[in-house]
Image (cartoon, rainbow, N blue to C red; front, side, top):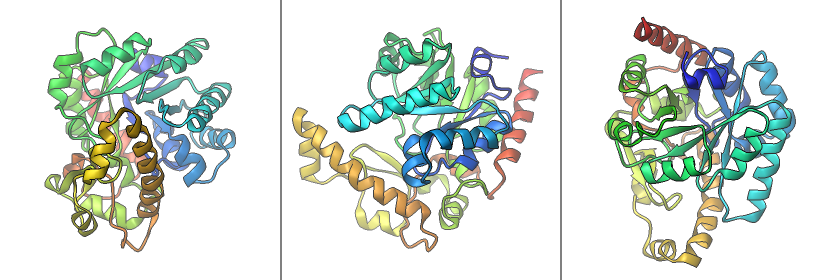
Length: 326
C-alpha cells in the first residue's frame, strides 16, 4: 500500500479522471466499486447529466456500494459566479463524505483549507515544476503529472521528464496521459509514480454515456490521429483528427491570439471560449449520428481496441499492479 492508496482509501492505484462531458454517475461509480477511484466532474453531473449535485453524489455512492469517490474542483476565477458555485459544490461534497479532491487551474489553497479540516486530501493537476511548486505552496498533498500523451489539455513533457522534474518534491505523483493498457500502467509504476489517471480508456466502456460514434472513433484511432487544437479553448486540446477538425483548423485565429496575450482581454476571451466550447463539446460527445465528429482523446488510443466494461479494465490493471509488487 502506498501513501496514495492509503489516503484515498482505495485498493488499486488508479483514478478515473474527471471528464467533461463524459463523467456520468454510472462510470464514476463503476471504477470506484471495482477498487480504483472515480472522480466527479461537477458540470458534467449537473449540466450534462441533469442531476442535482447533492443527489447525484448520493446516487454515485449507492452505485459504488459506498466505496470512496473523488471530486474535481476547477480553480477558475475568470467568472465570479462559477467560482462561487464551485465553493458550494466543494462544501456539499465534504458534507456528503467525499475526502479525495483533484484541483486544476489556479491556486487551490481554499480547497486545501476546507478539505484538510476534515482529514481529506487534495491532488493538483500540473504540467511542469513551476505549477507543482505553486500547488505545494497551497498545501496540496499530491500531484497529478499531466504529460504530453494525455487527452484534453495535455502537457508539453513526457512522463519520464515529469518524473525527473517532480520526483524530489516529497509528495505522491500520479501519471496522467498515455495509459491505455496494463503494460502502460506497469511502466508508469516502474518509473516511480504511485498511481495512474485514465480518461480516454474509460470513455470506451458501456458505462460511459458518450455516443457509440465517439467510442468507435477511439477504438479506430491510432496514436498519430491525435492532434492538438487551439481553436476550441484557446489552449492546445488533444482531439481525434476528423474531417470536422480539418475544416476548423488547429491554430487560434489572429483576433483570439491577440486577446489571449492581453492581461484584461485574456479573461474575456476565455469566457467566450468556455461558453462556446461547453455546448460544442457536449453536443458532439453525445451525438449518436457521428456528424459532429469533434472528440477529445489522448494517445492511449494506441492500446484501445475494444469497448470493454470499466470493471474488467480495473481488474486487469489490478492484476498487472500485483505482478509489479511481487
